[in-house]
Length: 136
Image 1 (cartoon, helix red, strand yellow):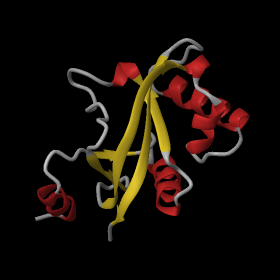
Image 2 (cartoon, helix red, strand yellow):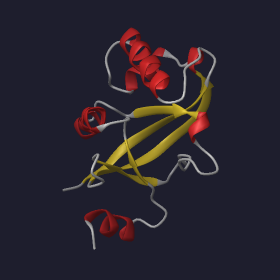
Image 3 (cartoon, one colour):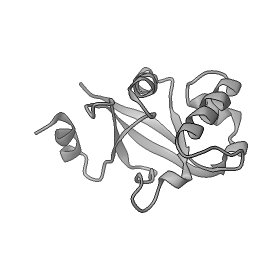
Image 4 (cartoon, one colour):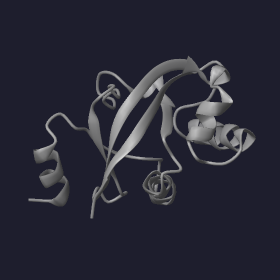
């Protein structure tokens, strides 16, 4: 049984996920979670639903994985909101732990452009979470 399977076995209903869109970004963002600097994340609403990622749910514990799907940590979702990119407040962006608000905007515009397109009024799922357990 893999390490991920063992973790999922003891966390019924947990969803495994990877941050970012490649190994480097995944490593950077996962390290931010592990350090406690990252307590929020956002994704394009278009990426959820039938055939897409599972929506975050308040109270559910999920498993953040390294790019190779080895489990890094368990997080618990504490808040989920839907908002347009242009309406993301600075406090939320700063909770993503990726630098100043202007840096967050530049990085996220580039990320969304690489992954299906970006628009100032695009809808996002914005999630706040807490680190529950560091794995491995």
